[in-house]
Length: 422
Image (cartoon, rainbow, N blue to C red; front, side, top):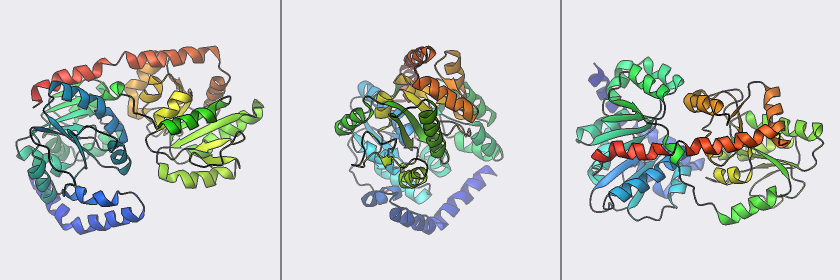
């Protein structure tokens, strides 16, 4: 029955291919695509396949992409002759990948989940091993790759409670899809248990590879601008915000300014989706007129709120601003990953993080995360950070120690997959 459903899914993917083309045309007009690289999504390569053995790593979006960089370095050290094909799905991750200078690492967009396209893709790139990151389970890609006799390993496997509930309705189908993985390494015990409940075999808990993320090279001109902006000012950061959280941050800004009589308070907002920056600015200006975008030349000492719409520069803010509200947590919708701000020694204020249960539990235990539930709690905790209460300093120190204590995850992962490396 399951094989029949996958066959139906494959047939429908071919039938609806024209609709996919129309959707991509709309994405072009919305500036969501790199126009001269659209063909890659249909397995028309823009780069020549390098000679020799090749490992295909699929990393979907920015978070997964960043988690692969240290892994790739380790693999290249063990297998210096092996080439890497890195695929991602989003425009922003592709723009970051353009900074890779190693000729042995080739970036392409992830091909469409279509049997004709993936066969063309596999015939051209001929990978000897596939490393799949986190949680995008494309049935056709996985099924066709396995048919080619290629081992597929899931790294940093993630299965949130929300995804578990959705997949559980189609458990028989999902079990078949994930049976294509020779090995599944999960980022937490919660994820491991959810995979097992859905019928996954050969599942092991290792830990989150994002603990081993290397530092990205920052744009020196942008960093110089950041340092100049934040110098001699009380500043806090609302990071990876979602709809509604920007106004929430603006209200906290106004309350802090009024209650503490802060004339030099600066609030930085970095939305999760930078394409929302223009809309966010318009919304906030009615509350706080002195609001500018980071790229604006109008930023001055009297600017109160700055919205950053640059790509891949969030860590630059974490290095320079040490009070951080993490988005997707008020109201709680799963939360954002706290590893990066913790690595940079930030005092992190967040609501419930159901997407990162194990990390949240550990960080609360190690006293390196500040949990808030109500609006008033968010305000009071951020106020404590601004006022530099004594306990905030220890939270920041504990955060760096916590991330450092997890640095073993990368080595452990590589040790387990080493027998598969070509």
